[in-house]
Length: 634
Image 1 (cartoon, helix red, strand yellow):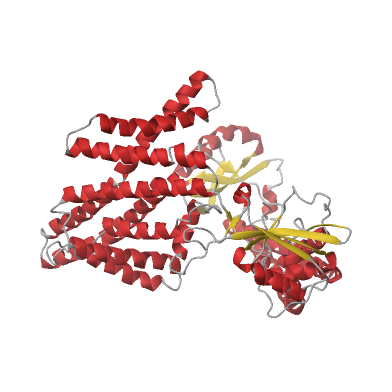
Image 2 (cartoon, rainbow, N blue to C red):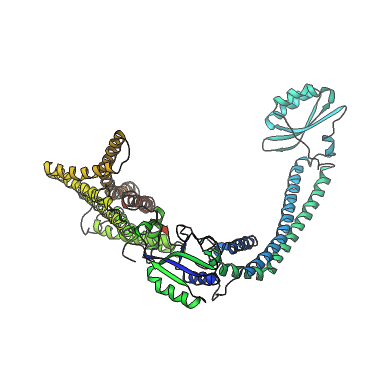
């Protein structure tokens, strides 16, 4: 891999007989070097999909396997398994699993029905508990009486006494048979002829009538006993069905293992279902392979394929760069930073890979903003305990902690104490002006680097006009450098003359002309667009540089927080003093440490990546065993 670039790729086109296609897929999958693609602009005469039916059966088998308890996304490749899986083998296994799934799904349906029955019986038993104190046939509450009206319902406990007095005057009787959570369950009994007279009374007391379930027919105690028996029977039936299902899955374990083996070995060819093209017994496969693997690919194909074939390798054209997958190769220590880069986007094939630059600048900025020997040591040591479970986080945290230790010695800071160790250079607390100037200088270098990388990306993708004349190109870089020089002259030398003005106007004029020539609109809209673009360039240059003042701000904020902790501790006794110091330092490490980590990421993304990094690349996804995901067609 060229430093800062994805691995060099070559386009491969493989012509072969369809009888060799499965073996070729297996060989390439075991090597994990081919990123398949479907180039619809070529070989239009070869429009058949010889692997299409194979994939359909494979997909059906995979679904049945998953339903029976397999996990197709994590199938592990079988050791030394190179045998080709034929279509009849897949079909036979699919029929077997389909039959087994029919049996298992029937058991599942019975289980579902029994669970629903169990839930219904439990709910009835729970509802019956409220009527257990009533010694009468509950079905009477559902039968309308000719002379006697019986109503069951609920009323708020706060309204019960008043309702009882009112119903007594109306010659109705009300009795509570269950109370709970501020609600009284009551029975209201009276003459059917006077039913209408008490409706308003019940309504004003917020009385709510209860419908008695049809299953409640008889004495509550006897009903409760019957329901308990029914619940026990249903539960027993559920346990028998679960045992039967478990035993069935155990018995078919060898079949599932066989299906897993077939899926692993069938996947390479099946995943080419919409990529492999053919006609009349001849098939064509196209993709991308790392350039350094060319000889290896040719050798392995020559060794494994039975019939003659033709393979062609070619360098990617500039017009194809947006379709070439990016393969990044980094050491284990840079992998976590590569993941952070991928959160923003994947570098394009011809783009600069910012992983190394990002990791170095991120760690340095963290140390600048959080420089303290004690705090850095605490972060580095405590992060080691996360190594096994969260290795990526641990690597970043350890490096950030070491950077914090380094700058802690530079600043002379130890757990917030500024007078314990001698600073190697200077103390921000005693020289804040210097730290502010250093932050601006760091930001200027950061933005100049980003602009240079943007120019490099334009050149590598053949966009020479953009590289020279655009705001992200050479003209933009010269304008920014001129702005820095003019700002320095004005602030430090109190001078701003024709030279400074010319240095600013000339690159800006180049950018304006470039934008004018590439804007297709009416005159007024053209003027407006060019004006806005020019204004945005000026604002971006100023705001981007000033944004790095937060590096100095958090450096000073770190000292201020420590001073606040010591100020509070000084008002305490001996024990309170040290408790406050310890807790205060923990607060600084956790809260400010997290904020600084986020701010560093923000500066990287918005002030760095946004200026040179499109992040629209395509990840290299090789054909391989043990993965059932289809390749993305690009």
